[in-house]
Length: 294
Ligand SMILES: NC(=O)c1ccc[n+]([C@@H]2O[C@H](COP(=O)([O-])OP(=O)(O)OC[C@H]3O[C@@H](n4cnc5c(N)ncnc54)[C@H](O)[C@@H]3O)[C@@H](O)[C@H]2O)c1
Image (cartoon, rainbow, N blue to C red; front, side, top):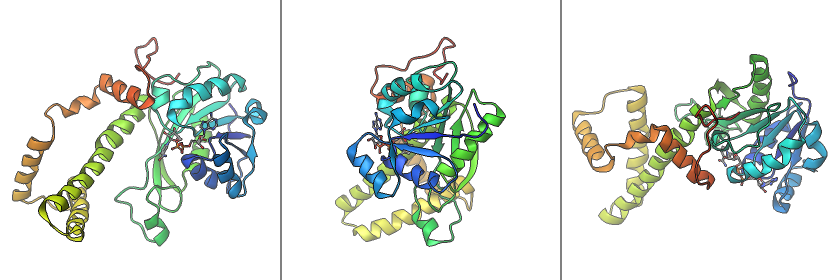
């Protein structure tokens, strides 16, 4: 692999992530080919002033292939494109699920990496309107990135990190971990637990308003402030929860959480949720018994 990517192909450039990372890559010196097969996606790319390239024209020469297509088609898309790539090139996916499940077309002479945005922290000190408005990251609010490049040397990781820092800019830290560790972060920690709790809190808000007659605005004010203070106390120990609050927390855990909830950190459970997300029967494992990118 070259120490700096001469030619980058981005597939799925007209999708949600494709459009976000294209906007940042287009401002850099990297030579990027924006590829998109859906007419609607192509229109979105062209509306920004970027040209749409045919992947078949650029795949053989690209050093880095970024696959910003839905995870459920990554097996098919990588199967069509990876055989056409030159030896030593790198395939970058934006979510660990397909790499974890060994769905990506395997080639010994190709590198595989994953880079997922962490999104701006709830504790980020934001100063401008743009930073406050940037909930997702990649525009104005600084975020970190969790990435895996298990076959990459330090120099190869540094070359990829230069691209990752542009794609998700502004970026604070790039955390290099394994594909399996990345899968424990997403889905397990941040989707199975955290996004579930976000939707759960919204459901609790709706239930409060529907059942008790508390005005929506009053319930929202109380909830949003308490989300903030609950996170500050639990994660930052800004001040202790009150004794009465601790009793209510225990009551909530007894009535809402299952005793065995930590089983979600067992690898067999990780396999189940990833198989469900990828709409496959089961996760395939390599000869070492690990489900990981080759
Ligand atoms: N959406 C998010 O918030 C988010 C966040 C982090 C990571 N990701 C990851 O980013 C990747 C893309 O997700 P997304 O939400 O942007 O998907 P999306 O559905 O918004 O966009 C996918 C794009 O790929 C195109 N596409 C589909 N099949 C194609 C093919 N065979 N060839 C070329 N283009 C094709 C589609 O037309 C579409 O424009 C996934 O791996 C996802 O897990 C998404």
